[in-house]
Length: 184
Image 1: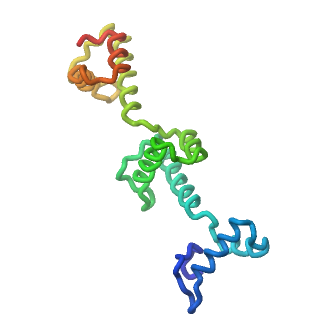
Image 2 (image 1 turned 45 degrees about the vertical axis):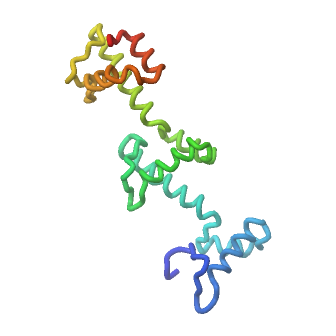
Image 3 (image 1 turned 180 degrees about the horizontal axis):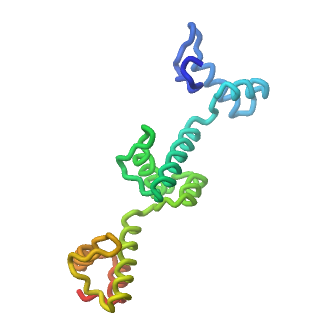
């Protein structure tokens, strides 16, 4: 009650008693399904969280939902803090875990349903290519003036960068640009 949480550090003592160790034992018993249901219920009523890591993940996910509802996107800048928590860093970690194939499937599904983009650079490239398609359909050419902006994005500069990187472009991107009619 004094601390406002039941998340007691493992080595914490209260009035000379090893409260942290005792709570750890209760959590272990609960996990093994050997904790008396009456005690489980009492501890839950106090606010004991059985799986601290899952609880922390859910709290961060709730902040991501809050960000997405306000901003209309899940593309959180890496340095962004939401309500004092490092949301950008957390989301970056989720992307790294996905890339390593160690992100829990249920978490991956929740993030995808919310609209998280896993591969930001690929997504940005596709968005710019879509703007080039839009320009080409309207103008009949892919000759975009260097300073031209399309829907607020600097399409001319982007296309110039693609031309300069012609030799190092991903083959798929090179092919898409050629098929659209980009002159190198």
